[in-house]
Amino acid sequence: MAMDSAAARIKGSVLITRLNLLMKQGGTGRLQQVLQRLPPADRKVLESVIMPIGWYPLELNSRLDAAIADALSPRDRNKAFVEMGRASAEENLNGPHHVFIRKGDPHFLLSHSPEIYRLYYAVGSRTYEKTGPRSAVVRTVGAESVTEADCLTIVGWYERAIEMSGGRGVRIEQKKCRARGNGHCEYDCAWEL
Image 1 (cartoon, helix red, strand yellow):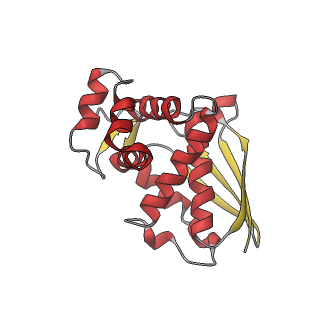
Image 2 (cartoon, rainbow, N blue to C red):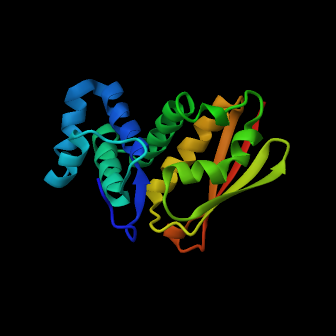
Image 3 (cartoon, helix red, strand yellow):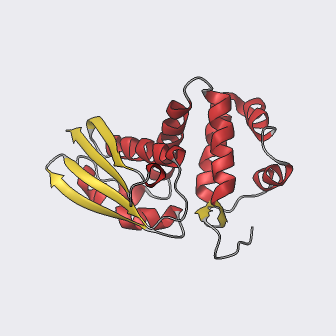
């Protein structure tokens, strides 16, 4: 799908992981249940071939995430958003982004946060700061569109990514969020090995 460069964009791989999660959670029936909650234009895009490296409207992803949360966990939507992030990390880090995993070394993955960010988002950046042998702070700055739901998917993504890197007892705490009026989003990450 062609996009105006001024619009907030996200990679097709994110949409693909969301659709794959639905298939794993309930097959074609679950997928159709969620797609029916979306406007016809969104359904048309999501029912066609999605290019993993293509750029798509971030708002499309936001509407899809909301529909998934309503279908999978209507009583605890926050949990659904975290699970979407975990599923995205699982799929992408076991697939095309496996080079960021080094068993026993979550800092290796976290140190690549700037590159990983650019694999998903068109605007903004992410930084990494090592704060201890088993802790770090990741910050997102300059993102065009920030919602608390998107931040919860990021919490889930980093939680699962650190686990896949060998971390146990992973704790991700979002200290700051642009959606709550802060200047950037900030995630404190801690784990055991």
